Image (tube, rainbow over all chains, first blue to last red; front, top):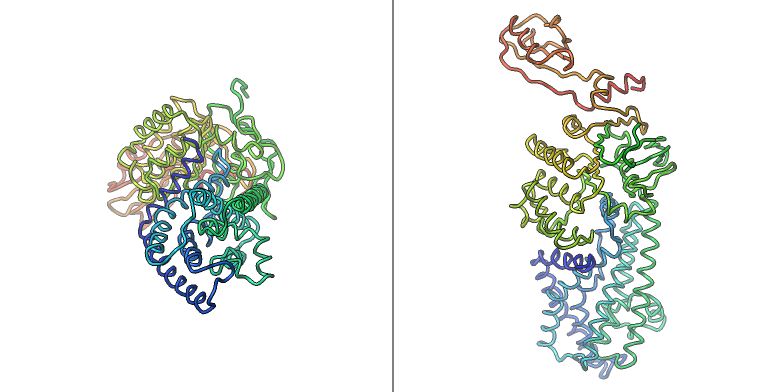
Length: 264
Length: 315
């Protein structure tokens, strides 16, 4: 087995040992899914027509795919790499004949996998049972939707990883981290669909990597983006995945030269 | 110096500064393939910093470092394939997975052939007696079990050089003993070069044929353990609990009285293992007072190092 694959499997297994956390996550996602879906449906009802291209079933799909992918795509980020830089355990990562960024990416894909199975799938099934939801319009949407989810995981990971690496230079990155989370949560289209944003905010979002983390896969899975348009939106994801991976690699190299592991 | 074996570690005028502090100061030494070297010094003397530069974790401020003939900073991955490292206070295992998984992952990372990985894992598990723990998550292992697992993990890819940073710290006597026996056997079989930092003189005595002492980032001694003991007169300490108050034992041959407590009920005699034995001292004392209990304290590294620092006028 290749190192990448076995590290992905290890990430899957590591996170599957915390079953209670998965169950708690699924329950929370579902409860919020119901509330958010009811709110959006009420808004649509009071508007009396579609809002920004969303009718009731696509709005429901927007909410439930968002809830389902919330744990899969690491929107809230992770602290592991930052903590390892701070404690010096990052030294262990440099002692292995692998690229640390790719090793962490593999682990994160595994984490995403178990979250998709354990949290995402039950949430989307529940959403489909409770509401009239728009399903992906065909095999092409399912397949490209799945690829788009993987790309979303990669984009979110690469962004988070790079933010974590700032710990090489800064004693405390909590502030930057919080900003990343708040900006990301808003601009990725988790709370409201990006097309509903005022023009100026939509422009900012569209020039940022955040919609690639959630809005794009949801658009494909909800059937709002179809045909040749799928290729164009996924190209945006590929661009951001590549750009952020390269950026992370550059920052990692610079950080390694700066590393000051003291003690032990 | 013999040049029969290739150098596996070479440093020349190696320097590392942390802000205003010079942690490693113009360090120059060579370790040949197959040697077993103890690297000792007080806390903060620069031991770990040197090791981190040897393994490509830390960038030297200036000077030269070669590990397996390579620059460890720019050729990190090649060096990682040929070196095994254990930091006693950090883990390279996967905390929340069964121990077995860590070995599997490391074998894959090092791209070992499946048959070779299986055979090597089985051999290490058997020699280190870890069979019963293979299914246990690493976080549930005892310290002794975890340390054996760390060493197995570092040796899985059969490195040419094994670097151990405080491998026996916190271990009980039996665990230390088992670990040392394993390392002796492993080296006998494979000729692995060993570089070891420790605070435990027993580690050095059992495992190393050469000692490097570092003091404030500088090399203060390079030679054999016997040579080191000869330089600083590393002495053992005999602690005697006597039945009745006894006058100070100032004239026992080959010893020096360190102190006498409670009217001479407990007395400490220091002696040089080269000039007399514990048995001879005991026999002599028994002729003068009834001995109720005794313990022998081995010279500890701090003591040896302190004496060396004192001898070189830098204490």
